[in-house]
Length: 224
Image (cartoon, rainbow, N blue to C red; front, side, top):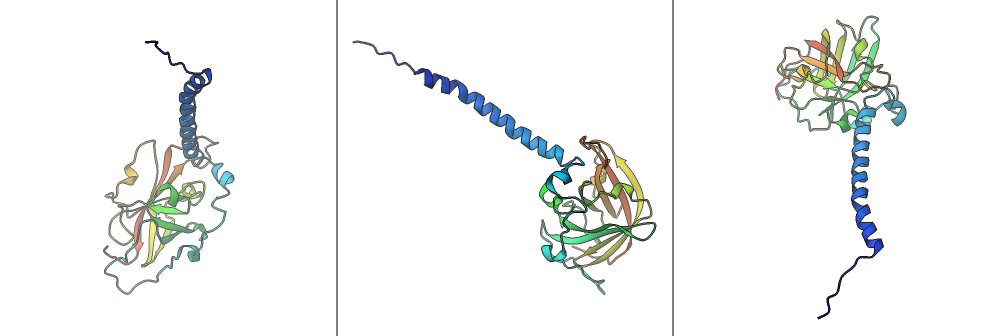
């Protein structure tokens, strides 16, 4: 019986050798794009690239459906607030009385998508008025560009969908690297505002954080 030897064409062998290299370089490309996006969002040039800065297009209450409420005579429970929805806005003033950080929308949640729209309250921290610590963050290249300029004694106004709250900045700190103490919802501060630091980083990735610790000075106590 005559044996037959199966042979591959040169083209088939070449294709089989090329495929692993194509998959390898495709993986490298995808990983590089992910890392590039993470790094560029931390640089001072990100706002120039995407056309969004703290002086860029303002998100209005009409865009989000948010309506700040006046001071309630009494409020026993916070209305239902869904993840990803705006429930407040922040204004910060100091010294001459002018508003230095103005009309920053605050969303429930602090993921990358929400921080592209405004500030985010860390899920699991307390709502304003609940009696715990409210933790809010935003990009230094946009909404919290002036956070590192904010002095102790500045007044932070948080207008929520269930009433207004006012805080005084009592401490200003810098957190290094992976030190995450400012994310502890059980700390003594009533409100924590933080952003990447420093603002002017000459294009390098920011690893530190500027942190403001605030004490509640006015507002109605509520429960969730």
